[in-house]
Length: 392
Image 1 (cartoon, rainbow, N blue to C red):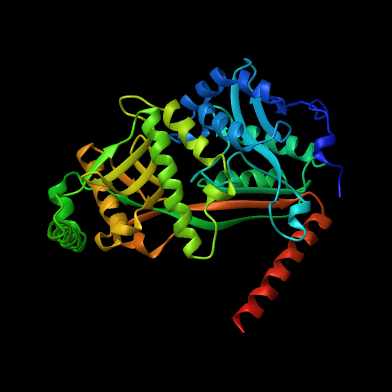
Image 2 (cartoon, helix red, strand yellow):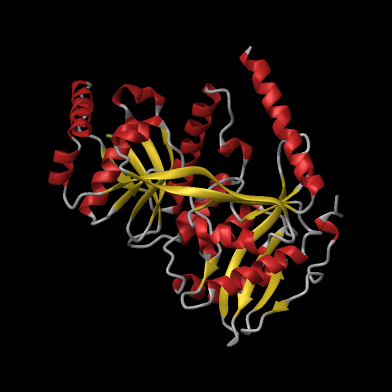
């Protein structure tokens, strides 16, 4: 194994430059990352991407709440004019579980654990030479193999980018592969509610059934609102966290709100940071009079809404609050001119009634040495043996 990354000075990784004038470097200091805010956002604005999760504000909020001061590993590339041409928002962390994996240093995208993003990628300015840039990023990763053991880049929508990066890493890494992990299902929305009703009669039938149950219980139809004020955000986030934790406790697991105590702070930071007339991060509540049925925190993209994290009130489970909230969010999106309704990463059965397309996500996995690969594989074997014993 290599020496600990914590022992390294931020300046030990040399810069590199190619024949076209591109210059790559690794940023380890958090203060230097903060200084890049204006340039970073300009890069994102000219990258052709619509992912809020690669913006400097989002990354800063995540690092502030979940990261140490010494695990940053951001690769930047500047062009011959000195402009920020590309950025790879990485960090180095230890795995929280696994007999051997917790000993390995994982180079991952910022935000991989706790996993709050649905898409990640290396940001490249439009018009720049992507091939040369990815080669420079690979060279920086190769030169810094003494800092990391596992290159674990998850949930990348651009398979070609991952494969090109792995190609340039072929001489400096071991057992590299790009594999499908899961997908992000979504619905291509029709142009009007009338068309939606014709295309999805089963959804409309269930909606009418649930609203009849609500009416029989003496309630007016549920109302969806967007939570905006900092005091209300704090109050409702606490309730949402309790419901989310109870849901996973019933299933023998732990909610991320319990595993990561600062998760509420992170969402609060984002909701305040991206507040506005048409906020990019949204906190919806579904109510029956003064009673809350369900919550949803999601991301407003240029072409649609992504339902990111939900929770519902089990006292009203007879009304199918999760279904009601999804229906109301989807129909609200249609009236706002959205083209897509994203259901979040994973292919859970309840999403099938809305899904008509999906975005595959890819994982680039490579190792700095045969020993790191052997340690990784050993944990796989232990897990397989344990699962076989549990099935007996």
